[in-house]
Image 1: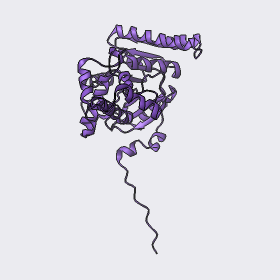
Image 2: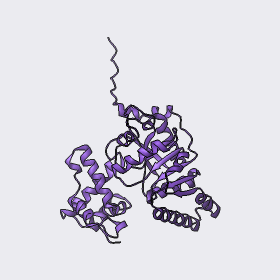
Image 3: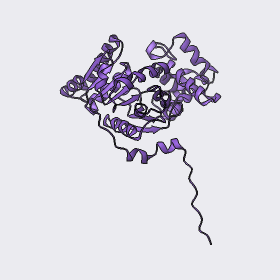
Length: 318
């Protein structure tokens, strides 16, 4: 009697790319100096946590001095708050702050081991930045993006005019931090088709040094977090616009019935309705499924300038 043949395993290339073995075989490089592009809430949050937890010098780049000043004031406020609560000593707060520098020039990025881009979710803007980073940063530097939905493969392609040249493209990866960065532990790590194993390993290791808990995702629209989260928020908005329930009822049942700390509409206000719309459009276009169609009410609110907490009005008034 013939022994049964083991079932053949068919594994897609991308699934294999994110296997544990690929990550464990690659050696992570040490990051001694970090650059952050973008001085908004996400960028400064990343810079602050990297300085405090990974204890590396961080240079923050933004084309607006006003944004840089506002960002540093935000960092000072967070540090003072933690000192007041006894979570951080005065000396540690001073050391953390001393490791943060700002500039309106990209030139200092020529000395970093890793750079994390944290600008708005605008494809052409990110492509332009990565084309510059490929020219300015050292040949070993990891080029990371904080994108929440844009293809990493597409961003990596912007680093060269020759698609077969992987010298810079292989160093592109996504480190998608969750907002607010100083509070949320999770971070999504996403590789593009060009991303090398050592790049992925270095990104994971540095995020761990920042005190984060990485989850690895394939390069698919929305990745993991927003592929799950945004349709949930969008459906809540559809429930509102079709009269299934009011704002407080929708948020209330999810908070009191499922144990989430914030209802979907309040969460959308916190994230920014323009960001929610942008991600839903990426999902709808990239996956081609009508279930990802952005809610009409969401689009109208963005057109009205009701973007949530940052504009003073969204589903709630602030």
